[in-house]
Amino acid sequence: MNIQQVNKELTGAQSIVITTHKSPDGDAIGSSLGLYHFLKNRGLNVSVVVPDDFPEFLKWMTSCEQILNFEQEQNKVKKLIEKADFIFSLDYNALNRIGELGELIQKTSAIKMVIDHHQNPQEFAHHYFVDTNCCSTAQLVYEFIDELKSTSEITKEIGECLYCGIMTDTGSFRFPSTTARTHQIIAEFINLGVDGSKIHERVYDTYSEHRLRLLGFALTEKMKVFPEINAAYISLSQEELKKFHFKKGDTEGLVNYPLSINGIKFSTLITEKENEVSMSFRSKDDFYVNEFANKHFNGGGHIYAAGGRSNLSLDETISKFVGLLNKYKSQLK
Ligand code: 5GP
Ligand code: MN
Image 1 (cartoon, rainbow, N blue to C red):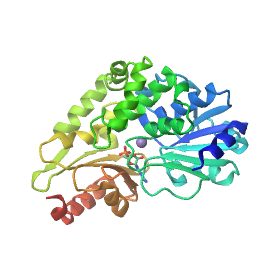
Image 2: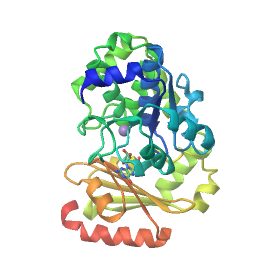
Image 3: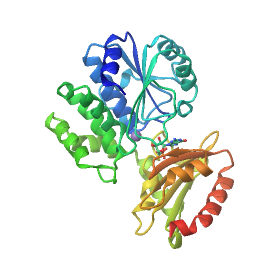
């Protein structure tokens, strides 16, 4: 990436669109809104577009109500993408990760820029600001602003959004991707008046009663542990989710729980969706889930956090997964 070139293109852009991945998480929304505020404060015309809705526990960030949801406002978003002259792809690196929205972006002649921390970026953009070792896209947005020599333009609002992205993607500053640099950036946000404790509360202490009971049910009734191979999985059917009045985001973080059992280093959440079965993988130490997800479940991601999907039924997917666990025995031990 040539930062002078990017700066020139951004300054001259009439319409900038920031996009992020499907089922947006804290990093997707936090990095997008952080960048949105930065560009908006510079007087630029900028919008944020998401492929589908995001959880309630993220709907406190300033200007989150300005975000356009492609599922709900197809025509408006179509027009916006068509007339955009600069499009950002945040927290994803392949257009097939954002469905139909990706096809629209593919077609435009807008300048495209990826800011992301996932492995294997696909070639579709003009500029790449990518670091696969970085804990979060939100931290990369900070680094991008730093490259522009503009960290003095970071406001409390920007800090809050980026704090949320870094916090959610590092499991509250505890995953191995958390560095001294991460803490230094967070310290800067705190100096701007960002209240880290409040942000934790807004994201993690706003469960509905149903969500907490779903967590209890999943851990008590639906978690299978294989201590001899250091693995565990949780499966949830549509019927079970409905019983607990499932809302988007209610299973967020659930996949991490089995990793807190002493010795467990591979955890999977298998969820029956309306049209497919979705898979979430998390790991520790020397077992890399992005490879596993890519090889067996049409997915990918980071070495310790990845996702995938299956078009088999829930039961067939579970059988396939358990069969694979046996195959990976020696690598998991
Ligand atoms: P999650 O389990 O939270 O849905 O996903 C974990 C991580 O893997 C996220 O960073 C997500 O973006 C990434 N991921 C999920 N599904 C896919 C996929 O199909 N392909 C790729 N490349 N990454 C994925
Ligand atoms: Mn991320």
